[in-house]
Amino acid sequence: MGSQSGRYKFTCNSVLVVFCVATLQQAAAETHCAWDTHMSESQESGLSTRRVIDISVTIQTDLPVWEKPDGLGAHRELVERQDQGGVAFVSKLTMVVHTGTHFDAPSHFLQAAFDSGRGIEAIQLSIMNGPAVVVDIPHNTNITGALLKTLPISPGAERVLFKTISSARRLMYQTAFESNYTALTEDGADWVVAAGIKFVGIDYMSIATYEELAPAHQSLMRAGIVPVEGLDLSHVEPGLYDVHCLPLKLDGSDGAPGRCILLS
Image (cartoon, rainbow, N blue to C red; front, side, top):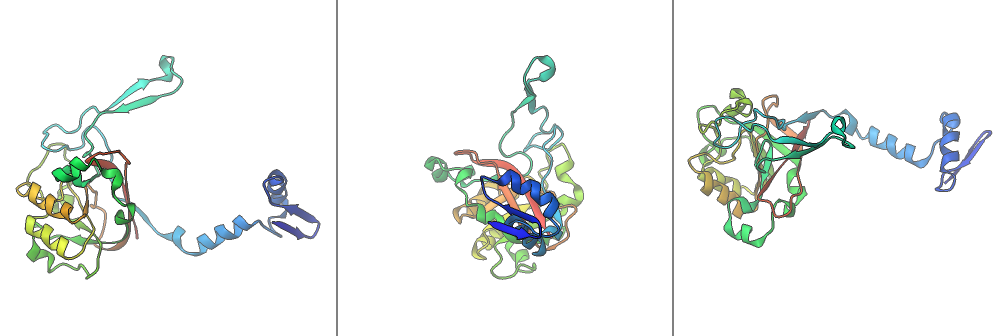
């Protein structure tokens, strides 16, 4: 692309890119290259003004772990150090894949899915990214089918995050495992399936209640619904957002930790 303005004349291409960059420093007020126009259009779209809300927990030693009283504990080992003759600092992680904010693959609870060899890497990323609603769950109940009928979940909603009393209790910041948490019952999971929801999230280590752990998970997974568990929704108000979640791409794995954000 060529451009001329006053006494400044330059060409932006792969051969003369150094010349282009140097000249831009002088001519910026008078002319610009095509990528500048693209950048300004992105900024004008309003994306840069949206608030990013991190709803992931930090993987650290005192993080709660399923059915453990003493939390995650030591999980990161330095296997190379500069101050001990190494070229760099290199860490090795040792932990289950269902640690912290994490995602369940169907192979976590379905034998047929496990036998297929397909794991978390096979889940479509589009399911975990897009418009979502955060709903507040009353503090005196699990998430049943009857309750879900009363919540502000619009027909056609595909992504729902449940903010429960676990956020107020800050259970994801309590080291000892707590089996008395709020989550979906089996008939609640059946309601989610019937509603056509594709992605569900919750603010403790399981989308399903402790008492109905397997049947509620299996109901969701047979329908292709992806759960994200271990979210931090303590600082999130109920309402509409865009959610963006990415699990680690672990071949054949029954789950994976990852990162989730909301855009308000």
